[in-house]
Length: 86
Image (cartoon, rainbow, N blue to C red; front, side, top):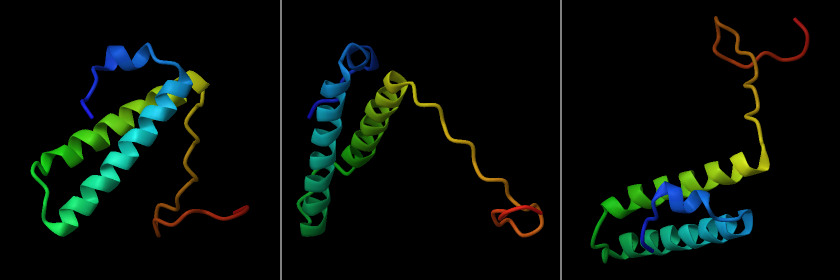
């Protein structure tokens, strides 16, 4: 699968982006199988595919209007998440 420029991805519909994400996931799986068997030609392809998947998922979330969820407050002393009322 050839990596597409961001501008081309922005023009795609949500359904097309979901299909691209599925295709990238399948390709990553195939690449992992080849890595285990020792038949991988370009290890740098992992990084490129993961980044392309991140771009596609980011665009999907932006189209859906999904706002990022705030992180749970952390206790400064222990570094653990706070529970309930304190």
